[in-house]
Amino acid sequence: MELQNCEIKNGENFTALYFGELQNLDRFTFKPSGLPELEGKVFLNQWLELTSCEISFNKLPAKKSIPFYHKHQRNEEIYIFLKGNGEFQVDDKIIPISEGVVIRVAPDGVRTFRNTSDEELYFIVIQARANTYEGNTIQDGIGIDKRVSWVNKERL
Ligand code: ZN
Image: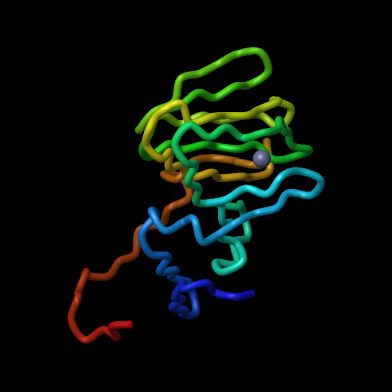
């Protein structure tokens, strides 16, 4: 997979993706099967080798609408809006979107959205298998009995 100006730093237990400024997301396009191509959408799994979810970075130009509805078979989606204004539609409901809005859509939700503003709309979408999450991060985290230090480490 072509990196398209992304840099990757790997270690045994991590992958760091240097993606660049979000305003340059236009260099990516995504073509869903049987649907029109989308500009400014990129899935991160191709670099990060995610094992639990898919994440995409997205930029929707001013006044642009997604020209189709879609739903999912098994995955829920979480849309995290970072900048811009617009409207999100699920089934027959319309939800206003702006910076700081997060929308979770169940697999069966028929969804689309649009940028109603004169500025770009930036958002992240996380897609994960519905009904597989157990517990929470507090229960899953394990404290390590080790004093925090920032010296004598390898800087990548
Ligand atoms: Zn989707």
